[in-house]
Length: 184
Image 1 (cartoon, rainbow, N blue to C red):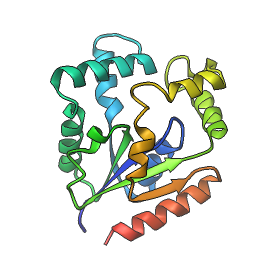
Image 2: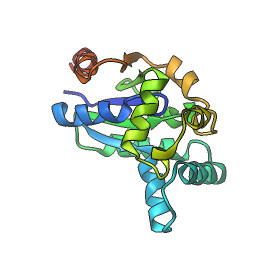
Image 3: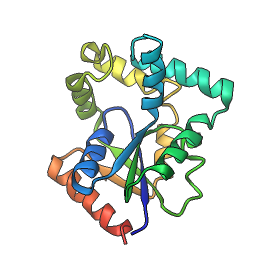
C-alpha cells in the first residue's frame, strides 16, 4: 500500500484536530503539525505558546529563511514517517504545501463548520492561552490575522472537503469515504 499524505486546511476550530485524531486512532496515521515546530521554538525559549506568539515566531522564521521554510520541513517529515497515512494539520498558506502539491500522494482536505459552532469549540478546548476568555467578535477578528488570512483561498484548492456542523459520526463517515477513495 502506498503512503497517502492528507493535508488539513480550515478555519479556527473547524475540526482539523478531530479529523487528525480519528485518522490516528482508526487508521494508525501519523501526524505532522506546523505549530509543533513553532511550539518547540517557543517552549525552548520559555515564551508562552499563545496564538499571537505562534504567529510572531512563524513570521520571523519565514521572513528570515524563506516563506517555504516550514513547507520544506513538513514535506521532509511527512516523507520520512513510517506510516501508510500521514496527516498534516494546520495548513494555512499556499506556501505551506508548495513542496507537497507536486506529489501524487498528497490530498488536501478542507474542513469547515459554522462560525458559531467553531467559536464554542475554541472556548471549550482552550488550546492556546486566553482562548477561554475570547468573545465572538475577537474570534472573528482572529480570522483576519496574517496566519489565517489565506485559509479561504487555500480551502478552494482542496481536492476534498468535509462539513463538520453535525455529529462526530457524520464527520467520521465523511473521512472514511475519503480514506477508502485514496487508499488503494
